[in-house]
Each structure stands twice: as C-alpha cells, then as structure tokens.
Length: 241
Image 1: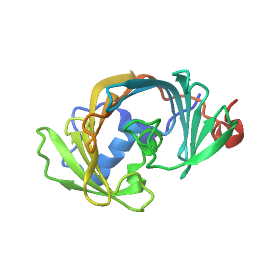
Image 2: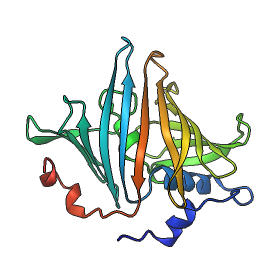
Image 3: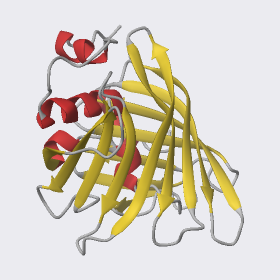
C-alpha cells in the first residue's frame, strides 16, 4: 500500500481555518493538493452540453501517478469505448482502438469535444505552471488569486481563482487567453470527503464564455488516494491493454 508523504497529508487534513493571512503561494499549493493529489484512482463522468441542445456523457476511469503521469480509460459512450488518454510529463497522447496507435494532443485541445481542455482534466500543477499573487476578493468569505502563465505552453495565459478562507477549497475560476478575453469560467460545488481527511469538490461546471449556450460538467463518483500506480501504466506501449 502506498503511503502519502507527511507534507501532502498535512495539506489534506481538514482544518477550521487556514492560519493567519496565508500567502498566495500557500493558497495555490493548497489548491493543487486538493484538486490534484500526487496519486489517485477515480471513477467519474463528464457531460458536454452543446449549442444545438444535444449533450453527450463520457464515463471514465482515471489513474494518476507521480511525476505528472496521468491515464484515462473511456467506458462510455459506445463511440468512445476503448479510447484512452495518457500524460507523461509535458507530453500527452490519445489512443484510438480503431487505429491501434497513439496520437499527440496538446494542453489547449478540447477534452472529448467539451468545454474542459486536456490540461483542465489531466494536469493540475498550477504551482509549477503559473506565478500567482493575492488580490482583493469580491466574493465574501474567499481569497482571490491571479495567476500568470510562466510559459506559452500552458492551457491558459492567465487564471483567476477564488478559494474559501475557511479551508482553501476552490469556489470559482476564470480562465483567460493571450488577448485578455475570458474563455471559460468554472464553478466548484459538491464538496465531498472521499477519504478520511481528504475533501474536494465532486462537481465542476465549466462554462464557455465565448459560446454561452455551451457548458460541460465533470462529476466525480469515487476517488481513492492510496493506490498502486506503477510507472509502466503510463507508457505508450501499455495503451490498449
């Protein structure tokens, strides 16, 4: 059984309040620990609502290992069954069973045609990807953070996050392109204790700010932190097996 480092477990532990006036860096580290623990296995689904009034729901199993390794297996719908996605460091691929090979994909590409992009789902390492500052919050009971991309390879040029003062849980996010225009906004709800000492939002709604009739909803049904995630599970040769 894998044991999480003490420093990470400390971030997960429920607390009545974050001590004092936390720095922007501490708040962002808390966000990363909540939204992207170093190893986990989850069952989830994403529903994409399109501008023509139709929707499609994807049922997924996700596995994350250390060192930015991430893998997704699609169970439904039938058109996506057998597809997989893989992240290893800064590289990502999608595996299509009909082709029996993997194709490169990018951070900013849409995740299964929805309003999350690949990095929204398969990478939460804002501490590494963004410089952050604390700014005044217009949402009662929250701190606000402004994030600026460190490199052009990130999914967004800038992000604004609101997190609860009581426990650092995310409440809202806004995501901006290089022009300064808001591309997406997110609402975090359904705070659930999936394991003792580990709580996170179970529901994230990502709204398309360019096409207002579009949104996608990611719902996590189960999440386990103490899992085996051997490195070979995050290699291209293991895709499709």
